[in-house]
Image (tube, rainbow, N blue to C red; front, side):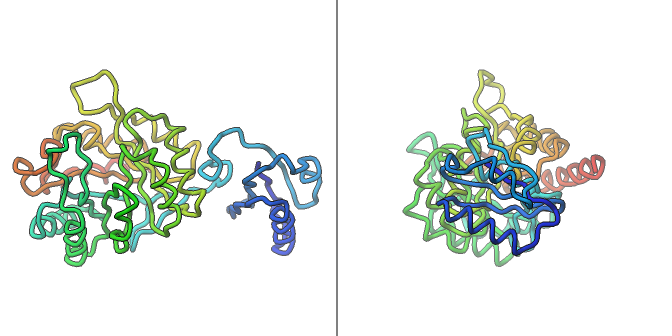
Length: 333
């Protein structure tokens, strides 16, 4: 349920209504917009007398929210959420260029890539320390050592870093990581999501291989229900009957999500296509769909990469891609 307050409501009146609602045992999400203030009521709203609430002098309208996701809904929070990551902002017209290797392989490699992608236009460095792999015999990442190497690359380049978490047990290792990524396979690991909701770090939540947008938003709701509202949604392709690409990139997800949620949406064309030759076209298309950022894999020597070399761009290719994305974003403004 949401209550829209009139524009001339005083701070004292807002505080009085807020206390009244909380005394009913409800949590109240307050969204202060340019034009209006919205109180989002969370909990057992059956005890709220809608007619009484609607009759209050300061209340403009009251309505129930039909979506199962509440805090992630744009009805609760009409303004775009903007997530600060160091000097970078994501959402609300701000754009993130996230780039780096699938896996951290050595300190020399990750620093070299970090400096190259920064020069090429990236403002956030990605790199996998913990690697979920289909085969138990494949390279699983350098784990805690990989995170330390990422931190060294952050020092060398000045770029904020994002890396994927696999389970709650390793959460302490992510204290100095700027954005924690939840991969597609963990999108519905609800225990992990709830623990991440207790942190104060931005969370990049990837859509699962066979999950609907509503399921993605319900996973975001798990995080938000614990207090963390800094969530970045990521479309990274879904599994269909097509085998020519690694997955099928659902770019329609970007405008749909922008309609129904206030959370920023980024696109990962590398995992979606699985082929470096297709990444630039899909990255440009993502920018044209008004995504809030792009996350691509870049390696200094893709043919010798320990993981996903086939979908990795070279630094030179990334720099050229960044220029195309910049032109597209200027064209659609």
